[in-house]
Length: 337
Image (cartoon, rainbow, N blue to C red; front, side):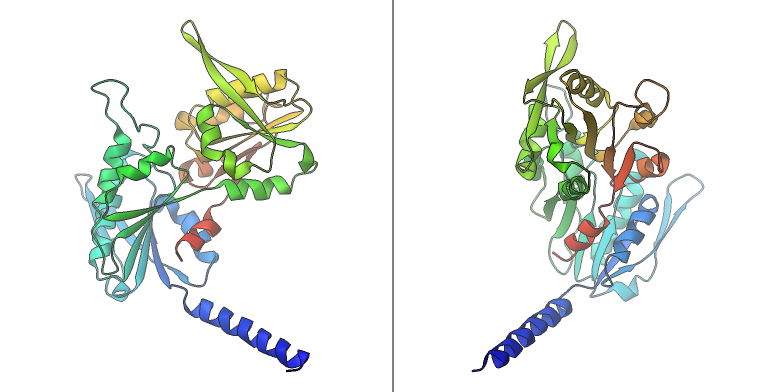
């Protein structure tokens, strides 16, 4: 066989495999809650195989939800997904009502995309009487009915503790994804990338993420108790002269990040930035990080979050130092699994 003939056969094989791969992609009908409309549109823009569907989110006079799933007959035999945001207890009931019904509409498969698992940090009991609400939420999600295609797939990003996978029952299949690839891509775009090192605010963050960031030198901080206070100290690593990026799964008030920044700066860090997958920021606590005349204008060069918490993204807008790294492409890929 001539070399040209062999090359032609190889090119034909590659083209055939590409066509087969494209034909095997699932056509997904994506429903979403009101908070997630922008993220849902971004996900659909990532793939021609994703079609947005709508729900009428209404309420009765007494405040209870009056809901209607549009095109319910058209999704029979189709792959269906729902993009959820459990941002507060007030919105969970109406979304769960929809989530429990969709698999019963004779769909081929059902996927719940819950980018932020909100009670993930309340996963253990320290004394008798503590309520581990992470387990409660996992039980609620585990009761999603089985569709014609089998158990529901549940896509969650950077859950607070990996052992929480065992809180879910066998009726659902949890798929734990991460936003770290978005961070590594962004870091590669920075000037002087060779000076970037990663800092973890505690041992828990190190255990959670260090294997995903092993291409970077690391610094680990720790919290020690002094009297009634918990003080952040540098445990290992040298940040001197480097652009240090603090990495964690989520931020609430941001107090720990600020204390870490102070410690890193005191040890000679040239710049300090932060990344969290979930910018929760209750009570607008993100405002303490914005570049304004409050003493923090030079504290954080960048603060990266994802769009897993839509209300935070809407509130922050384009205010420095915040940048939003969208999960849309990653979610679009996850819907094909």
